[in-house]
Image (tube, rainbow, N blue to C red; front, side):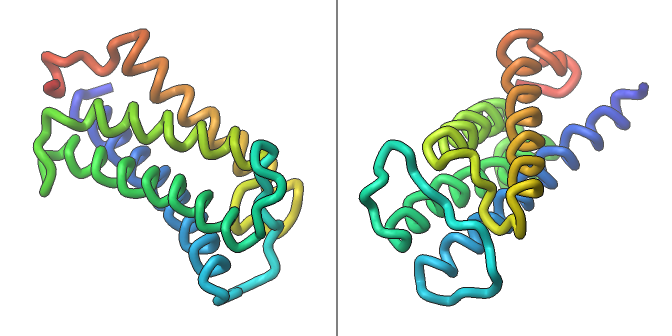
Length: 150
């Protein structure tokens, strides 16, 4: 596979992962603001079960919003657009950690999923992508820095 193809796949993957988090954060923040746009599974926190649904949505929404911004910024940084190209790795790593922490804190319910099966599927996909990002960047040191920069 050519370096250009690898670059497109990485940037597109980070961008799409960011968009998926963006949809989830939008659902949560709309719910927190009282603007319900559909019938979604409620997000619950096992760590803070006594929080109201509105507060839970707001806190979870911030996790997904930070992940959204981070993944999209990492994608743009990878191409050197609007964000310095040498920070894409740090952005991707921190976004994957924030996303994983959000999933862990909020019972693995994917915001905006219409059913338990879709929520589980979306959650598993997000965790697999997060794990792939963390393993590739932290353990395998892939893609090579000399090929795509810091």
